[in-house]
Length: 210
Image (cartoon, rainbow, N blue to C red; front, side, top):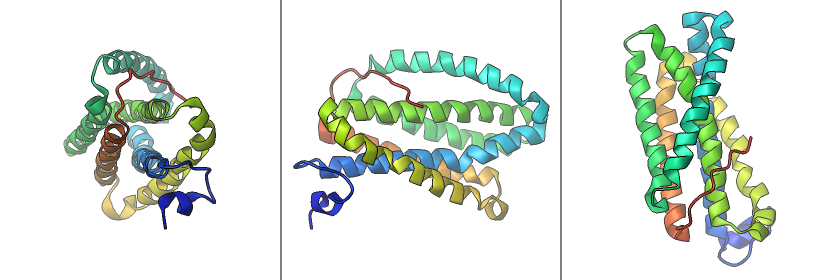
């Protein structure tokens, strides 16, 4: 049975759209699973080290930092080859996650603060990148038919990430970073395959959809 026929009860697919639509669905699933695996830990680690009363200040500061970093990200991405730049960002984020896992072993208080800010940025970045890729791959007519389906992977990924996060009592909160990093690396592989398959060459318009 073809993938198009298999998915036909869920989405109106045209000829040869099935594989890419499934990959985009997997992309949104993996991205949100990775993020939601560490999301509860980021807040808990911060509150443990600095207290809930300091959370509003860090939220304000992180918003400012994220704004600057996302501006730089958009500027850089518009000037780099699409075939590797989109996936490369996620490979780099995998490295950042693993670096934080190592830093948490030091017990330094600043690590939980930096990790909280980084995780907030990661959430924005993943959403931005997903819709960037979607807008590059699909034209407006395809978008009307397919965006609902490919975006449906996100809430399912959120559920999967929350399920992984619930294992913190068994494996340790800090060790949640490891499956999150693994999911991020898988996500990078999917993005690289999508971009290569669709031969994306146009400059992206980085759009953050919340």
